Structure formats: structure tokens, C-alpha cells
Length: 449
Image (cartoon, rainbow, N blue to C red; front, side, top):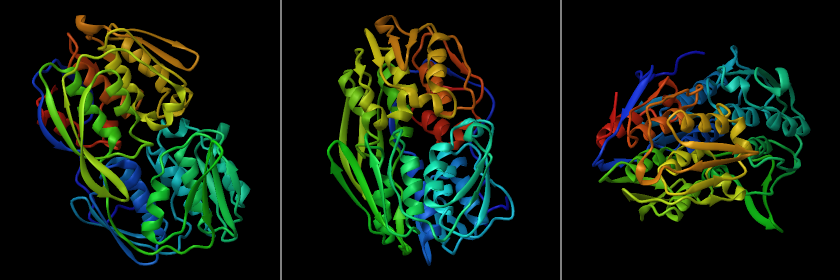
């Protein structure tokens, strides 16, 4: 893939890292920019006729992979300053090289949906982790709309997609709660004949629905019984926009958890998006007894923001029902770490979707805890954690990260509060979502080496 104009210097670290018990974590840090919104902003800007300006884009490996793929598809994508990007949309064309999305499930699935509406052929590839993740859940509805797709074994990457400018609209009920699948269908639906409907038995993050109107699109959301129904009229042309990306509640979870667990700590994370479909972790933490204060902090991308102030807290185990999973699906590994320091048993229910992430996160999270002396078990799709309470988590283990950025960061957060240091075997993948993680932890006084 050709390099972007004004490419970024290298960011992040690689290799193993060890986190040691830290106390008195203090300070104020800005939340890392939201990865989900960053992907969507780039893709919608590349579909619009004209030049869009995006401020505070998350410059992580995942998002940069999406930017590079858009360039190969014919958009002009340029970095004009730190976090500031300009995208000039154009009709998409067949790329001359495979589109390598690295580790980005969001990037590859949304790009497949957006590309399906053009007369082009594109081959999508990724790294070992992404190549193990399911793609049939996106390809099946796109085929129903008229696109053609050939995939690897069991519907996985590599995928060769042949789009068409004569897509037809569909009325589709999501078999799994997936904002990526929903968004792919909606992006394809922009070029379809008729109204595209997506039905959600369980509501998922709605960033695409909120961002589409910023680019001039019509989309509506309503309820039919227990289902959320999104309706998008077809044959819509997008207009360029100027937008700023909000802070990522998933990334903010790591410094927040560290401050909850490390002794005598008190920090503030500013500018965090409060989207209800992304904020479930913070509700659960409050139920566990976390001392968390939320202060309104304006709005970006149609999303309300807050500043999160958090102090060291005495926590109790809880049961988290399966219907809460979509609002915190990416935060379960770090929630399990928090549960390890609580009094009593925490039962996290209905986590089947964790098996289809960057790794089998359900098994990997259990292994992370067990390696550090925490009693943990899996029953069906439930994770049961017996907290160590005031006695504290022993620590001293090595975390096998399995190419998973959230496992790596969760293991390091555990080490900031456990009795003995915790080592993770690799950290390079942290740059896929939170390239400033090490700097932010250091800024509040955390010790990772």
C-alpha cells in the first residue's frame, strides 16, 4: 500500500513490558480520541463529494490502515497537522493492490460495506489476528444486496469483493449484536435502490446513525416492539463536513481502572463520550462501589461528552446480565481485572461475542487472571471471578496477549495494583487503538517498564 502524504512518525512501543505496584496516581489527562468515530469519519468523508476536515482523529495503527485503504480506493487523504486530516472524496475505484487492514475489524467490515456500492473489485487482507475473525456476518447481507464476494476458509479473510452500482435495498434483522455489521449495511444502503432497514434485537453503538446526518444523509431510528429499527433511504449523495472526534470511553477505561485500584489515587480523564451504547462499564463500576463523578463537557459528533473523575475505591462483586454486553463488549477484560480486586464473586454473563474478537477474549481473560493468582472459571459463556478483596491480587504472572491490545493493557493495569509485578509478553499491538497509553499512564504516575 502506498504511503500516505505527510505520514506519521512511529508511535508506541513493542516487546514485553512489566507493570509494578504504584500508588498516588494523580493528574488530569485527555481521553484518547475515539477509534470507532475516527474510522467512520474517514469513510464518510471519502464518500462525500468535496473536501472534509477532521480534527482530533485518533492516529492509531487501525485508523491509519483505514486511511491508507481509502487512498488506494481513490480518495485523497492528507494529514495537515497533529490529529488534523483533510479528505477529498471521489467515486471509488478498483485498487491496484490488496487493501491491508492490519488488525482492524471495524475498518475492514465498514470498508466492505462502503465499497459494495461501487463498480469495483477489491481484495481485503489483514494480519494473523484479523484473518481469524468472522466476515460472513458482513458478506451475507452484502451478497443479498447484490454484491459478490469470495472469502477464505469459514468465511474469513482474504476476501475479494465485487461491488455494483445497482445494489438493492434489504430489510435485515441482525443475527448477532454488531454495530460493524449494521454500519456496513447502512453504508452500502447509501447507494441502493429503495429503503434499507436494519433491525436490532439488542441495540448497539449508533455512531454511524449519528454521523451520517453531519454529512447530509437522511436516516431515522425507531422502535417496533423490542426491536430498534434503522431506516436509510437509498441513492443518497453525501456532502463534505467539518467534524471533531470525541474521546473514547473504551480507552479511558484503562486509566480509570488503574486509579480505582492503585492506593491513594485520584485522576480525571477529560472529554469522554457518553454514548449509552458505549458507557455500560461505568454504570457497572458504580454498582460495584466505584467513586466516580461525571461532569458534562460539551458535545462532539452529535455525542455528549463528560469529564470522569475517579478515586481509589473499595469494590464489591456484582452480576452483569447478558443484555448489557453490547454497551461494554470491549471493556470486559479490564472489568474482569477490576473484579479481581473486589470483595466477593463477579459473574459476567453472556460473553459469546468475546470469542470472535482479536483473540478468544473469554478464554484469554480467564488465563490472564489465573496466571496472577485469581480464582476464575468459565461456565458456558459466563466468566466467574472470585475477587481477592483486601488481601490483594498476588500478581507475578506473565500475560499471554495473543495479539490482543485490550488484553495487553488490562494485564498492565493489573500490575499497577497487584502485590507482585505483572509482565505482558508483547505491547506492539497497543498502538492499534491507544498509541498514547504508556505516556498517559506515566503522566499519572504509573510505573511500567
